Length: 321
Image 1 (cartoon, rainbow, N blue to C red):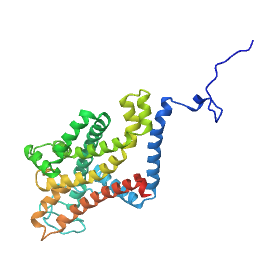
Image 2 (image 1 turned 120 degrees about the horizontal axis):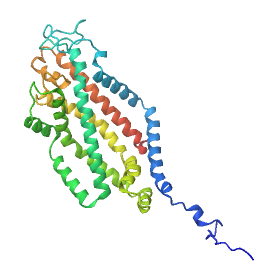
Image 3 (image 1 turned 90 degrees about the vertical axis):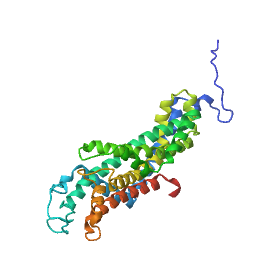
């Protein structure tokens, strides 16, 4: 008696069972998105390694970050110690002294901490809020997208510096306000109006990723929204946000300096580049060195982050290769 086994339907051209070539497991369905993200990141890093702008920006940024974290490595002078007022640069005070007799070099080195801290914290906060709201708007659509879009439209109508001025005027500081409280107020003032641009960018990036087959396959296989977002949407949509966040960090450093320059951001006894620039205005014509050095450090720092952002943008832009 001959055993009969069920026969697989065969491809008439290849002569093989159709299901042998049809793998619909979740790993297979979701792998394309992860592979694409890894490939994009690897290609971007390959481009960055050969880009002199990236290395120049990276060296400068590392230098400024180390300066902000460990100012004692660069100067042993107390930034609050006084000497001869308006002293020009010399061997004892490399950058000279300001109108109150403070060592400008020591003040410039120590001023990096507050300025860079505000920039980093504001960038982290705005990026986190913008990524979450942008993904939610694009992924779920409907009333969620409408609500997020209308809220961002309202915030877009308020200029960043003007909003910061209003906020800091409503919640002013004085000399008794703790340092971290002052920094926190400036971060909140800038973050309140900084997140909508990240939200809109992330929303557009996610909407471009959503129609891809690997996401639709993951949905069809019953993957949860959180899993799809974490494994497939975010890795493939985050690149534009990384570029903008890098540039925004420099923008927020300038914004902090602007608020401090107006006397409503960081205020003495806090030390920052904006405070130093503000203190130099009364004597800028007679003693330009008091303004020049903190302004130069501020400009080079911001330039470094913008240069890094341009390098990262070019690395992720496959059309420019």
